[in-house]
Amino acid sequence: MVAPEQPFRTLTGMHDLFDPDTARRRALVDLFATRAEQAGYREVRPPLLEELGVFQRLGEATDVVSKEMYEFEDKDGRRVALRPELTAGVVRAFVQHHPPTPWKVWYAGTSFRRERPAKGRYRSFDQVGVEVLGVDDPDLDVEVLALAWSTVRELGLRDVRLVVNSLGDGDDRRNYTDAVAAFLHSRRSDLSEAAVATSERNPLRVLDTKRPEDRAVIADAPSIAEFLSPDSVAHLDRVREGLRALGVPFTEDDRLVRGLDYYRRTTFELVADSLDAAQNAVGGGGRYDGLAEDLGGPPTDGIGFALGVDRLFLACDAEGVFPAPEPVLDAFVVDTTGGGAARDLVHELREARLAADRRYGGGSLRSQMKSADRSGARWALLVGTDELAAGVVTVRDLRTGAEQETIARAELVGALLQRLAPTAGTGRDGSDGRDDEREGTRT
Ligand code: HAM
Image (tube, rainbow, N blue to C red; front, side, top):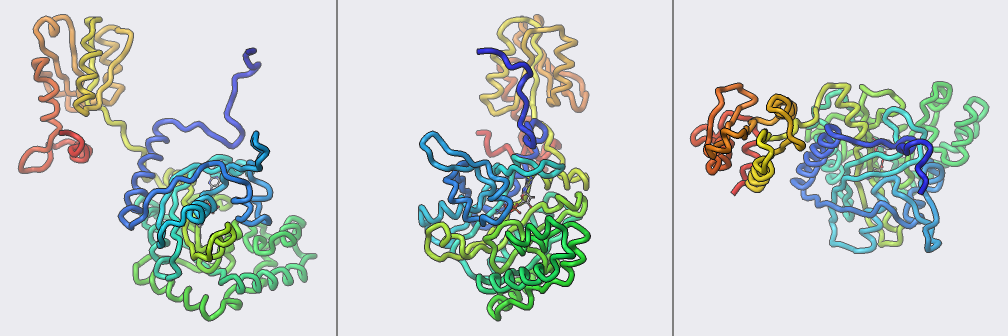
């Protein structure tokens, strides 16, 4: 095989992720999973690739489906697509496996949209989210919105707003769409060319426009509030009441229509004001009561949300919150004998569930100590010819700089474990909380 002229690179809009970003992502997924599981949600993992039709149900008039999907024919001649989001796959899974309702699931995963890349807008991006199938109760809407809100708060974000709207049930939404289409038609000479084109495909999307000239026109458009049925109004009232009772602050925006077509009744977005206006939605969701039917299942109510992990982290950086967790390393073995001491000792430490590392290829005491310092380990464990001969290890505490100790090789692992264990009475040994956390894994 001939080597490429230029080394390969990631595709436009896609990124490699490294530590500490990867560690931070894992911490976020852990935080979210814990919160969701405490609220009775269990994990679901639909595949990344589905039959194209699954995603076409998101609305053929939406950009996500008509312009941004990675779709192709597989070798069996089937039209397939990489998922642009997870809701459609989760609802397809619900229809396929008919689990008992209410079906409460959470997920974390990557989606793909062939969008124009920008800061906060990528072609491969991660989301965490939940879906609930089979419950019509507006108190569930409150639970779902509160979960999204408290996740964002727990990350430490403060400059984020929750914006709520109702798009009404199927009939309300259809009537409203017709009214907006008629309005846009009557004002087409005042609208930008792009807005006129969008109004022909998907009139509601024009309400979302960020162009100032269009926004002036949109200000006069009819409001969804005039089209809501009494049932939709009652549902929205109960959601408002619940959010107030739980102390979840929100504002309402009757122009919030969202980018996917499946939404009915409650819709919402989390907006980070620390980000550029064009990409400031860090999450969004709502009800999609007709989607299960569209995917060939029985009529089933549904609601959920997804938070955009990449954008959440941009907002965290802007606010200086939720830093990546520090790597945890208990011991770094420094072996200047060139024998098997480092090999055997790191293995023994790891088998005892201590985090241990070493350097390969030997090197002087000085250079190995440099590696030990850089590693962030708590202890450097030194094995030189003297230690080897005496059957001991020199233990240097790299964090406190306390005087080094000599411990018998045979007792070393037990002694280190004891130091990490909480001291009776205080419940702590004075080190950081991670020790407590890991206690359960040490037997
Ligand atoms: P969405 O609004 O399309 O909704 O995406 C949710 C979040 O994912 C956005 O608010 C944003 O933070 C992030 N996101 C979307 N596209 C990109 C991108 N190209 N680059 C970076 N981040 C992005 C959904 O996906 C629905 N499935 C949410 C839902 C769940 N509705 C009901 N259940």
